[in-house]
Image (tube, rainbow, N blue to C red; front, side, top):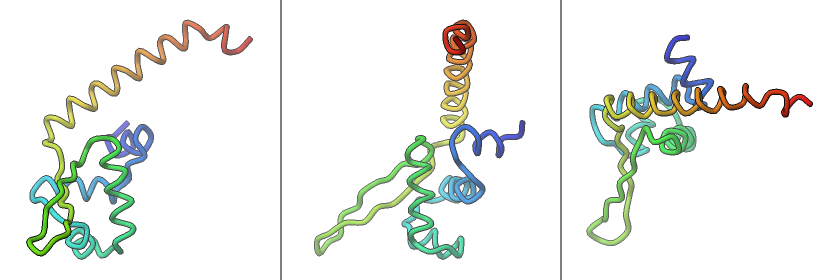
Length: 109
């Protein structure tokens, strides 16, 4: 299985999310900046960022404006941290599947 398929099946992460992750590895950005680069509207970018944040691939940082208010900037976790996280997810999934197989009779009966 290639990595793109693994992201899709295990984490519901598609090509737009992977592209955003890649862009944010290089530079922190706001939603509007990402939208311009990707040619996507704000809501589409926000949905993708939410998926990435839910699985821990992207972090959000709140910045205060001088006149009051705030905005968010997003950044990707380093690739080595992502690798560790993915390995942990795969190991946990493997343990859960092994346990499910042990209890297959209970599930099917």
